[in-house]
Amino acid sequence: MKRLAVLALFALLPLTTVHAQDVGSVAGVVRDKATGVPLDGAEVSIVAAPGAAHRAGVTGRDGRFTIIGVPVGEVTVQARHIGHASLLQTVTIAAGDTATADFVLQPQAVELEGVVVVGYGTQRREDVTGAVASVSSDEFVAAPARDAASLIEGKIPGLAVTTANGDPRAGTEISLRGTGTLRGPRSPLVLIDGVPGNLATVAPQDIASIDVLKDGSAAAVYGSRASNGVILISTKRGAGGPPRIRYESYANMQTLYRSPGFLTAADYRSLIAKGYGFTDFGYTTNWQSQVLRQPAGENQNVTITGGGGVTNYTAALNVQNDQGIFLRSNNRDVTARMHVDHAMYDGRLRADLNMLTSVTNSFFGPDYRYTWRQTLIRNPTDRVVNDTGAWQERSGYFYVNPVGLIDEDNGAEEDRNLRLHGTLTLRPIANLQFSLLGGTERGSVEQGDATTRPTSSASTACRAATR
Image (cartoon, rainbow, N blue to C red; front, side, top):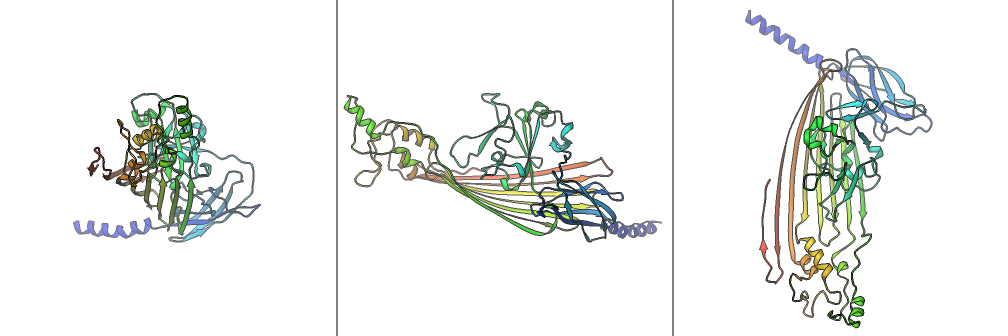
């Protein structure tokens, strides 16, 4: 009896394997009928398939799409795009093959059903009762972005995005409900593909959409962490098809719009002539111009997407170099991201694996706040260096040459971070879904600094910390 049971089990295994592979895919291009231009962001979905769950894809800038895990047989494919009439097409799917379905959409004033991300799922826009805003990649700010917040600056009512200082490591600050506390956290909760992070965790070029939950109802899902709102960031994912490589690059330059007005050397001498007891050292120096600069930056991004009938992948590499407004305040970020999506059992079981790693190298030198203070109180009739080429110093309590502070203090900081998380989704029947999410994060920070200033306060230090 046991032998018969074992034989029956082995006999069923090949049948199960064959059934799991009994799927194909649909690929094609969506174009505008009037102009022939490929349509970006068109939704293509399977609307009639024998016993299949809902399958859909979105076109890229070249108008191409790929839908995987489609059961064999005759299926109906629908293409929709805002401003165009929808179109249906029937294709036949063969096991392991890719059927072609090209669409040419007629321009027409139509309104599609809007869907936004809410908590751990999605809802139709007209059914949402809370304050929710959604911004897609087509609506992002068309300018060099420091982080995710820069993409939606001015796009959402009630959301304020500010740049706190000129430190290239600082990033932007975001506020949804104003200042509700003096000492507590004021930043919203940020989730990247469902995993907590920050606005600089993922490169702006890898972001597909940003959803903002602004009211207190978000606390029902995320608890007290959502007291300042929730930012939901969805990253870009490949739609399958042959490998495609996309390269983006830009450069930027910043300038100080307005600086504080302080006494110049001419003002000093004018006041001395009126009887003020100031000291004229006989030189003319603009100390702000000695420590500040017009910072420049550049960004390079490479993305590779592709996939077959059941497995899609996306790989991205981003390199960003930024300068701060102070001399030597440089920062370099290298971020790599990998996403793999695999469908099994006619698309009822889906596995997502995401990896994100980053390395940040930055200048770790003087306290720029103290340097700025010394810049503002420095006598404008003094000079930067003396006749021997050494820094010009004067006696005084906490009175130090600011240029010497920047030039003599040397240090470096390296920040490494690795995030791994995966999602397993099971759809046993239509309108029923089970999801299991797991992940881990590891990081380390190493710092070292030294000073060569020949003063009594000079010191040499080297420290390292690991988190």
